[in-house]
Length: 454
Image (cartoon, rainbow, N blue to C red; front, side):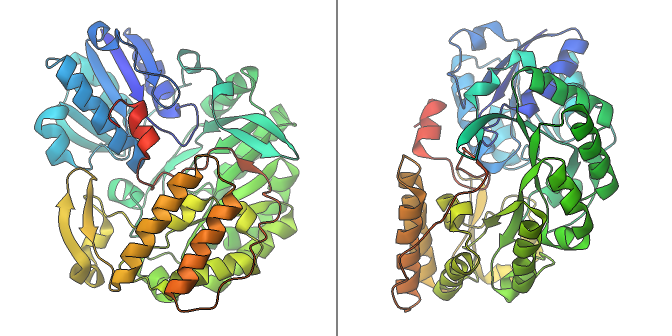
């Protein structure tokens, strides 16, 4: 069977979530074509060539864009079987299954996606069982040098993206992972993982992003991965994502990881407001965040925090406090402006829907944006977020990040009735990837144009 696998967005990385199922489908004897709309247009002959199409949706942005792609496919080929697969496949099922998709597969999708062309299964499946790992078919994708790079020490290095595990041990209420994995995680066997990294290095990769929701969910597994990675490729650098509480609990492993190539850590700080952190069930405090910044720096790496500034409980003072935290800890250089514009998403299945404190703020479900709408207790917060989002998208077009952040800070300070902030000195950016956008951000106009719906 001829199957088209389509990716719309994987944070600027070559899409693992197309390469992995492509390998499995090839093993099953299918013909496979892969397309990444983040870097290339949809081939004009693809819809006519395909006997089935599957769209990868590992995050909110990808799902929003993927829906638009499916609309276009339905218009050109009403009879074409279409599947959505990945973490967000179950989101908005009433819309996608109502005419856009025949099959939705969330979680551990590879086996069910491989069975789908044979007519096995229909509707929505959420699968988190154990499955055999495959070595992704990277050769079917555009070259690595067309994707995000690591910027470090005045140079840019070709970067690759892998996952050593999927799912998460934790159930943070705002995160989409618990609604699928429910506090469980699945490791990728080291043999197939190292084989994938080996082929990526052969393709030119000099840096690897471990995109696990939390690289330290299984610290022993992670340590073995790092040891084997360094033994095989001693010059390769890498970055990880880890919770604040895991970085504190496993602080002893950080110096060794830095010695073996770790250059920065992404950690979801989210807010400096203790009540908001509690409502999100983050498991850390603002003082813990300060400790992690010092801890990682002492180990020889840098922290790149991610933020969720805008929630129903946020006040203008909370937003201003985040900027002041960044100033105190010299983190402006490690912060992409989009991070200071993120508005809480409440998709289908979100744990927040069961939170009593959420109920007074909820509005109707927005089928286009695939999220339950909400309003902040303070209307000024909604206006502040809309302006921050505008500034972030405008700045992504080439403005210096420090200028965008300075304008955001000035507006937050004014809304909080605080004095004008000092002149922002961003300082050195430190090691970072060249892709500035974020998985929980709304698609930009340019992203929508790339999928033909802008």
